[in-house]
Image (cartoon, rainbow, N blue to C red; front, side, top):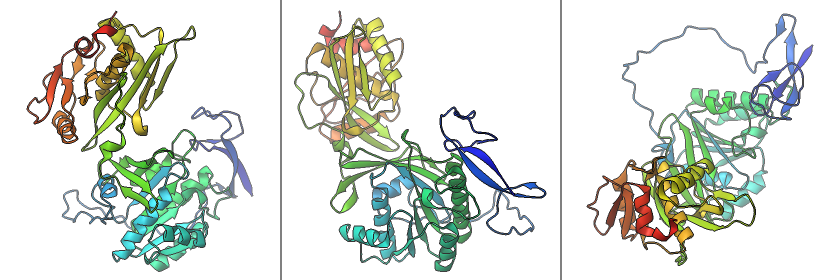
Amino acid sequence: MSKSQFVCQSCGAAHKKWSGRCDACGEWNTLTEETLSATPGGLKAPKSGTTKSGKVEFTPLNGEQEPPARIVMGVDELDRVFGGGIVPSSATLIGGDPGIGKSTLLLQVAARLARNGLKTVYVSGEEATAQIQDRARRLKVADSPVQLATETDLRKVLSALKTAKPDFVVIDSIQTMWSDSLDAAPGSVSQVRACGQELTRWAKKSGAAIVLVGHVTKEGTIAGPRVVEHMVDAVFYFEGERGHQFRILRAVKNRFGPTDEIGIFEMHQYGLAPAKEPSALFLSSEDTQTGGAAVFAAMEGSRPVLAEVQALVAPSAYGTPRRSIVGWDTNRLAMLLAVLESRCGVSLGGRDVYLSVAGGYRMTEPAGDLAAAAALLTSAAANPGPSKAIFFGEVALSGAIRPVARTEQRLKEAARLGFEQAFVPDGSPTAIEGLTITPIKRLSDLVELIAPEAAS
């Protein structure tokens, strides 16, 4: 006897009958029918094994157990994001767009760990063994003692892992795994949840570190229910544009390390390598003579990164001016334009505004307000603005420039890369060798300094 229910493939909510819209998350056309096994006593979730009852042992909070020793992967950018290396008995979920380099990076890591004496297993549900071996030859890691398997049946995978007893496991990908205890298609919410739970439980019991690869939706989030992200210990997103040579590994959850670190990699013919000069990837090599560019000193975790903000202010050809933004928040730009017009007398409301952060970098800090304002002002005034200068500071609605954290680190990175001027919030350090620092109290001060002709 069986009974069906309709499960949302976006949030995992269960419904008794089909409808076009999920009542839990509001998404349309995401409900699919799944079958539940039933017993005379009523419906119950299927089990993959037998649960043994026993005594629960408690441990005092002030116990003297040693912290888990990390497995150093030997890739500086990767170890930085993980917090110093991957922790044994941990489960990690890595998501990213198709073709972004997830499998390439993990195959390189598995090969490096195998060469260092760790027993490493790579299980693929998407590629044949010959395809993985061919990629390994292209990456120059084919001589590494990595054990390969191509299987999607979770029961067979777990049985093989229990026999092999590896130290490091890669599952590529979690959406291709399926359990025969569920009457649902691979990749469905029920299958992803069940397989993720079983693999995480095995990692905790075996002491091995396991990495699950996850597909992403068109919105950029990992496909499947969010409960999978809650199961695992760490969640990372692999970002980047195919047209650019760099990739960014960004932590969004990490029980054993920081969640504001990023790792930057460069793609070349032999795979992914750590970027030697991350700031150079986000700076334009062209010298802009017509204005519309400003360099922002950002902080990504403990690392300062310089990125170029580009702006274009043009006459509007239609009744409604256009706003086009890449790499920044649309609402933040609207606020900045309102402050420029109300507090500084710079009228941009009737003109088209285009703003982009070079290199595909995403500007998330409020400290980027001053750099965006500088790019807009020099574009509106059609002058190049100060040369070899950086900008950072948060713009308040009153027009005041608010201070930001880690100012000295930003300034030292700018001086190291050859910048000569810095426009920063008032009260910032001024004794940085090789750097002329100009404190800015209000946004109107910046207008007078770099683009007085932009004010009406």
